[in-house]
Length: 211
Image (cartoon, rainbow, N blue to C red):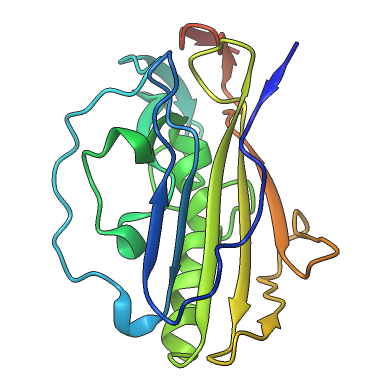
């Protein structure tokens, strides 16, 4: 089956904020979101309620077990930003939203777990802290959903990030995840599965059942 993804490559360094969103494909799927910024360019706009439904998004409740052994039902899917709001300032932008499991997005079934390396929040929170710690440096951050054929929901999310000095020198950026791989250009690549331990997912439609 054909793997559908946009090639990974940093944006040309221009000493300014850049945000590039690939156009939706024929199925209405978001394909790539890419930003280059430093601390002073982070947006200050408030986060808005999301009402856009990306392809494959459904209201599916599954049973989850808490640490005390009790069970409860909660949503499987969320509308996940490719480039997070803290960097992009975007909310209901179809080119920046995909159907994502809550687990992939926030690292847990019902709460945020920033220590889960299989989640977007692990990398987003650390990149945000890095920008704040090194305000003179630039972050190049590309997020690409990986689809199989015509499936509506991506099976994986690829993250690619690297730092730039004001003189355009590439500086490798490592956040401490065992999923990180450094390529020949000095860019860190991470592949996150868009899955959930409690679900069997049909990526073609977004339907899922209890595991």
